[in-house]
Length: 357
Image (cartoon, rainbow, N blue to C red; front, top):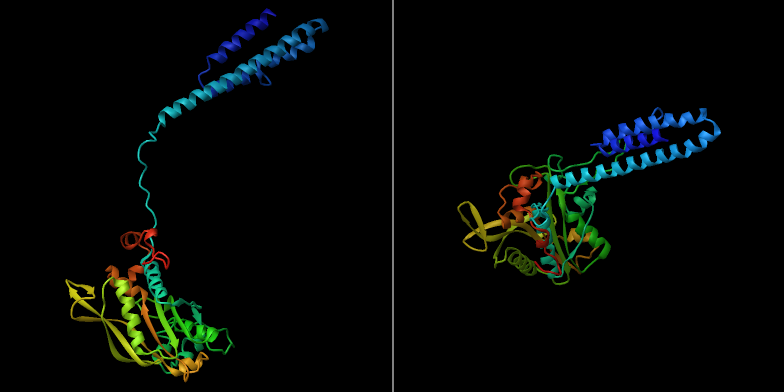
């Protein structure tokens, strides 16, 4: 028994002096492993007499349990000490202000689309939408665009390919949102008052044109609508959008889907290479418009002898450039974060029909 007391004292002292968990693990193996000192003592029980085994067995088990308990306690103490040291090294003053985190911004196209929608909604216009991949009929035929018109050439329009042996006319990526007007009149008839914002596609690319851009078209159909109503609607829109009274000038033009047709200019001035809307003696063309052609009404199932109305269309990207001083249309679609941070809008700046513009 005296040998066991010495063995106990020796192991408890060594465990208490362990400096790290690796050394402690080595001690566990040396004491309690298969070939550990205490494990070898346990094997000696088989060679003892029953009387000796009765005395030595409980003593060895008690020693084994005491050493195991000491190892567990020391391991926990070393873990706590290591954690304390790490926390001291990683100390942080939580009262310091946090690092600035950049927040996302609203793209100018999204911003202006919401502004346009809110202004026209205030004038009683509903929003209509339609597919971006259109049939030849809705994109051209129903809008009185003849087969020889340049807009139907492959150099100007993106056509889809049919499978070999499929002789149906190809679909197109819509070149304007006018097909939405036809679909709406087919489904709802007259009277109606709608705008149709959305993406459109044309094979063009320069400082003021991109293959994909955004357009909003307006349509109002009733029994006694005239060009005077069109002029009022547009001047009200531009005055609300630019935040100042804006005069318009109508110039006679030609579009297959309107008769009479007019291009609309807004009053502006040029100073230092920048344009200021609502002042000066210059004019800037911004959209096309006119009275809806009777053949377009017929194609949509509306009787032109009973109903008439006006239509107009403008580029959302273009009026965004005018209002916010953006010089190059191509930058809208370059995914340049620096550009977005400069021209983007905070989420709370987004206008709505309820909150106003």
